[in-house]
Image (cartoon, rainbow, N blue to C red):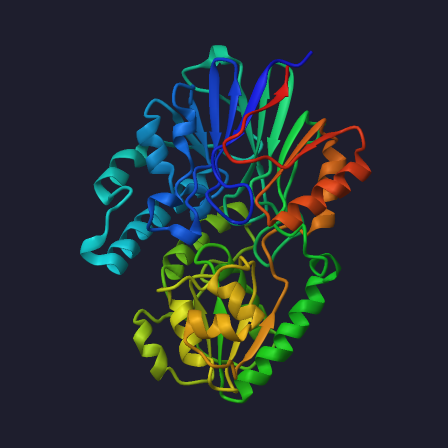
Length: 449
């Protein structure tokens, strides 16, 4: 019989929210991720429900990767659970520092005197030495609590630099958390690796569970379509806006554009980056060469464009990579979309996931009333295209992973309701004896025992 393990999602389950998953192993507790909800970055409502863990042990905070919806509330979690160890990959350690400092600076600038920080720079400085980095596929124990018998192993998740799936082994039980994962290679990163042996329980993302188109797209065909479309716009003298996340999507897109230029598949035009993409590029350049010797440092070069207001004076042809990927209000991509939408020579290309309820999701759908209310636009004259360059696995790859790992229990998170339900329904077809679950935030579920 397996030992007793209890699970509770203290953060978001549906959509892209504040990821935080708690596992209790009798007298020991582990929190997987500590995110902020991107819909409410400046509000207390953005936090996971950490009060659910009052009176329960939290011995380890294990971070899957450095996107804010997964690490944005790590300082708050450490304040609540000061005795906890913090584990992540070495690359995530480097990126977490940058992302958390940047979050505080952006919110202070945006909100001015009204800003009530969840944490500040001196506090970030005081906790950064706590982060411990461990390489992929190098098992390590819960330090200071070796008697617990808990052992952790990171596996390359293929999502962004440093992203990891987390295998937890305890008294004969094996629990695997995918984090955000992509099985096939991207332009820079290799595809995900998973445990070789069977796991007992699997906590998996389901981001693209409702996207039937993604599973049929061949990367080479999508690159060809992108090159054709962007080439036409640049020849017309247009400005092409790519709303991107500063971490991950920015670097992948610059690498792809660089490859297309080298092969003379697109015209030469200036590439501009807004936000903190340039700082992240430097970290990528520094760390990727160690991980992938064939990667050439300096490939991720582009010009900064720091003042958003100057965007109205920007001359085409040009390629503009601007955060945020979901066009959240007050971000550079939101401002540029407003400025560029009226010119039919311009284009907005979505190259990653955008929550349907965010401004980016509304812009993609081009619904008149929402555009008027959210962006102040009567219509969109520029070209709008969606390209399948996601850093997430499509649903068939997720099912293949599930079938290979053969878990007795499968928990689905990190997806719209339709995505979660599709994944659960189709998992039952391939593993009819498995126990499947779409959990609810704040509810407690026994995994075994």
